[in-house]
Image (cartoon, rainbow, N blue to C red; front, top):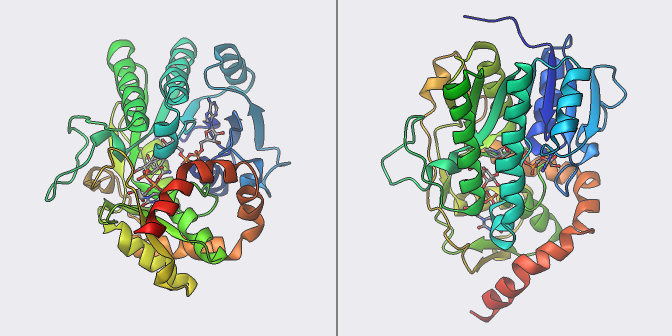
Length: 347
Ligand code: NAD
Ligand code: DAU
């Protein structure tokens, strides 16, 4: 059954990769809605991700931390918010290995604060979770929403804790919540610490592509557009209290993804360097997405199209990523890769 859509959305993390794609998509599809983006503007949160939308009377920005209960409450009250969509998070697995505590602060405590405000003000909350909460998946199985959670990295564990807090609030307090668990998203405005934008921009610059371990890990590379339509479907037709997987249901290896990036950009395979693996690297993610399909949703892109489209976007949008790559990103890149790449060169 279709419910009347929400009118006033608080989109936390709306200046990040998926959040900004969602805000753009939502305002195109629902021009009668008002969106308040609530974002701390960490290194991954960039106002330019919504560059041509600022100034519209339908969109505003509050710069703040989701852990700041007073500011979250005031923002919801002043804007008559009837739906919180929670994208805000620390999101990179490698960063969670280098410095895990902020992942607990934002992903666990921050989500908990949003739940408390939602409970106090009687607001529906939709939480963006991830396939990483299921842990790595044995061959032949696809995760379904009722599978036990078995996260293995600090990032995944913090997302699993948040996911379970959201479910606990539905059970204990009857809070109207929904959850989507997304696969690996690719597309415009993804910070270049993540594999597809990192490999695309490195290839364009003629720099090595650092593939962790043997590169045979499997991921479902889904276009961010399909994640946005999946979330919209759940917001409009999902059952309150339910969890929905969002992905294509098809995986490829990282080596296949790398080949596709190189082929799309017309670059040579000699750029690929196998480097020391990520500690605890999950070998395979794979989700069954039939529950979402049953609501009438279909992905528009298969994983190969998604990766190729993403690589082309980085080729055509150097204005977006060149300033990022010349800034604080360099320091992270050296910390994460200098030793690994030196090790690869000696092999
Ligand atoms: P991102 O890192 O690009 O963006 C995160 C956003 O959250 C940024 O705008 C950042 O400034 C903001 N933020 C961080 N800490 C905050 C805080 N304490 N208070 C307010 N804002 C804060 O992330 P993304 O890739 O767009 O991911 C968005 C959500 O989707 C996350 O919850 C992530 O776990 C989930 N997810 C991501 C993927 C993926 O492939 N990228 C897949 C499945 C689920
Ligand atoms: O699956 C959903 C998750 O996808 C989201 O919840 C996370 O927020 C998002 O970051 C992503 O996590 P991954 O760790 O799977 O994505 P990442 O882009 O970091 O890596 C994709 C694959 O590529 C993974 O197997 C690790 C590998 N990789 C990654 C980097 C950055 C490399 O081989 N080399 C690299 O330099």
